[in-house]
Image (cartoon, rainbow over all chains, first blue to last red; front, side):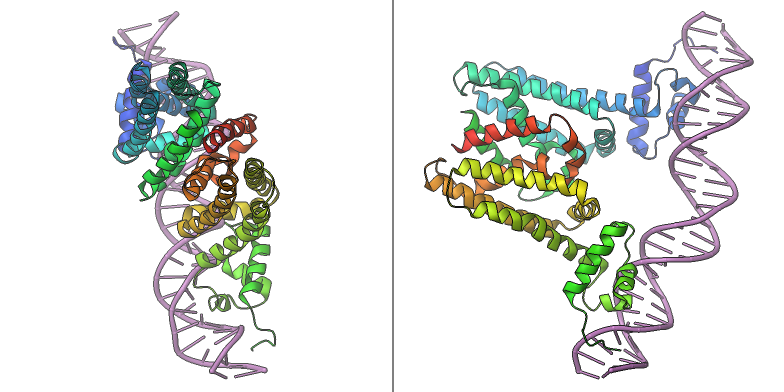
Amino acid sequence: MANETPLTKEAILDAAEQVLRRYGPDKTSVTDIAKFLQVSHGTLYRHFASKAALRETVTERWLDKCVSEPLEGIAAATDGSAAVQLRSWLEALIQKKRLYALEDAEMFAMYSAVTLEAVDLIAAHIDHLVKQIAVIVERGMHSGEFKPGEADAMARAIFLATTKFHHPAFVREWSSKDIDQDFDAVWSLLLAGLQ
Amino acid sequence: MANETPLTKEAILDAAEQVLRRYGPDKTSVTDIAKFLQVSHGTLYRHFASKAALRETVTERWLDKCVSEPLEGIAAATDGSAAVQLRSWLEALIQKKRLYALEDAEMFAMYSAVTLEAVDLIAAHIDHLVKQIAVIVERGMHSGEFKPGEADAMARAIFLATTKFHHPAFVREWSSKDIDQDFDAVWSLLLAGLQ
DNA sequence: CAACTGACAAAGTTGAGATATTGACATTTG
DNA sequence: CAAATGTCAATATCTCAACTTTGTCAGTTG
């Protein structure tokens, strides 16, 4: 019964994202996604090896679209102060995490779950973000605004040192009244270490 | 049937710790602890308002005895390099967390659970640790080894920036091969910010 | 023959009744 | 009378059978 428009991975991912947003990561079954697409659930297994692989791919795409890509814009700028640029980049990362935790709660829950299950996928996403930081740090070192050093190691240190403000394990603490002051304290110390 | 040696809070906490170590935080009931002490479970409610209060008090005592007190020894030293002292203190904190995660797994699981439930208790414990860091930082500022600044804010920033290496949410990542290298990267950046 | 179906086994989840635990308190005991 | 008991209602957890979901694959279809 081959259809004239055969099912693509992208179409499945779009459907999965919609169903996931409606039912949440815990209540969404492969069968639910198949029903939505009006295909047999077996069909989805011709495109994805397992439910876990489908969940991971949905999350990977969401992270790329909602986190990596918008931040790429900030990291790509080549003018102005590197310190200001770095702070903007970190604030944008943190603001996006807080926003999605509230406004796209089901996809954020999916991302939190995948963070615990798919270590390699998250490691690759983090590498991607650290590379963006490294570009900013390198520019700062080149212009003399930051002191010379291992830009990649520094970038990774900056990402790790701000974990509390962007890692999903801390969602509940992001509504604390002290959180912005705490970020400021960490930022000041990191900036002092860079300059 | 009042006993000649009336039950003390400490005796209950000792018993609770032993039973908790045997059965783990999920499988230990107030009745189990009462059975161990050969008293009625109702008796325990004359000493603790609730099971949650008992769990929290056990955890508080464990944190004081196993974390705060040993680190106090390192923080109290008044000679040698403040940088070396601070690094020793942080390494001791991290090493203790890793050790207990493996060697006292049930009490560590109890602590992980309480970290999610009893925000105020953990906040007080963290304040305590941050004060110890502040003592080291202040000494470093006084001796001219660290540049002058707000020692308390810096101490808090140091604790927050090293979250990934001591917060129980990251137990699973502590066995990664990169973890020590990552700590080194963060340490270098923080130290540069202090000096 | 590529794309899909649907029947199937194995694994996982759900719900309802049985059992255990929590927490309050009137009562007992030395 | 302070300390502890044991019963009770409410809440939570366990058990196990019915059901759902996952993942495979031989078979169907355009």
